[in-house]
Image 1 (cartoon, rainbow, N blue to C red):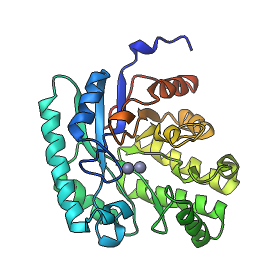
Image 2 (tube, rainbow, N blue to C red):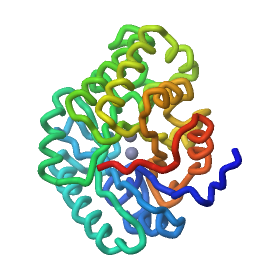
Image 3 (tube, protein in one colour):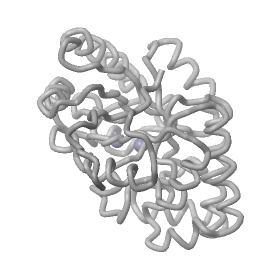
Image 4 (tube, helix red, strand yellow):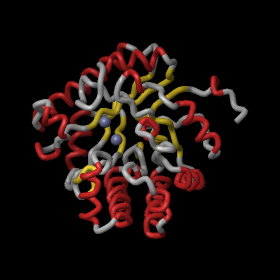
Length: 283
Ligand SMILES: [Zn+2]
Ligand SMILES: [Zn+2]
C-alpha cells in the first residue's frame, strides 16, 4: 500500500481497560491515557467492562480478588468518576470518550439500560462473551461446555450469532465489538464461518448493523492472543465493506504495554479491504 501511514490519525474505539478497575488488566487508567497521548492518538474510547449484576456473573479473577457484585458496581462507578476527570484533565492533548463494554448474560437488556442511565457514558460497545451464560473466549473446558449446551460446534456459532443479533436489536450499541469472537478457541474457524447456516446469520447481523448505522471495531487483541488475523475475519470484513459499515481500529488495551499495538496492521488490513481511514467516531 502506497499510503503514508504517518498521515493517518491514530484512534482506538475500544481501549483503556486498566488494572485499577479490572482484575485481568494492569496499570492505572491515567498511565494508560498518558501512553495514548505519548503515541499521538487523536482520540480514544475508554471502555471498561461493565459491573456484574449478580455474584454468579463475576469473572473468576474478580471473585478471587474478593469482589462481589455490589463491590464491583461501586468500583465501576469509581471508574466513571476517574475517566471523566481524566477526560477533562487531558482535554487539550487527546479527546477521551468515556464508555463501557457490555456483558450480555440472559436478562441483561434492562440492566444495560439502567447502567446507561446511571452513568451517562459518551457511548458503549456491544460485546458478547457468553453463550448460554458460559464464557466462550476463556478456558477451553468452558468453551467445550458451551459446545455441548448448543449440541455441536456449528450450532454454537449459530447460537452466538443469534444472541448477538438480540443484543444489536435490543440495544443498538454504537460500536459492535469483536464481531467473530466465537472463533477464538476454534483453530478451524474458517470452516465454521462458511457453514451456510452460520454465514446466513453473519450477513443478517451485518445488515442490521448497516441499517442501524453502527460501527464495528477491528479488534487487535486477537493478534495478541495468537490469532492469524484481527477480529473481524477477512470474508466478514469484505461483506461489511459491501454494506457500507464503518470499521475502526480498537486495540482493546488491558495495560500500558498494549496501547497502540498492531495499529499498523489495522490500517493495512482496512486499506487493503477498501475502507476509509477517516475514522468514524461513536456518538
Ligand atoms: Zn477484558
Ligand atoms: Zn471484549
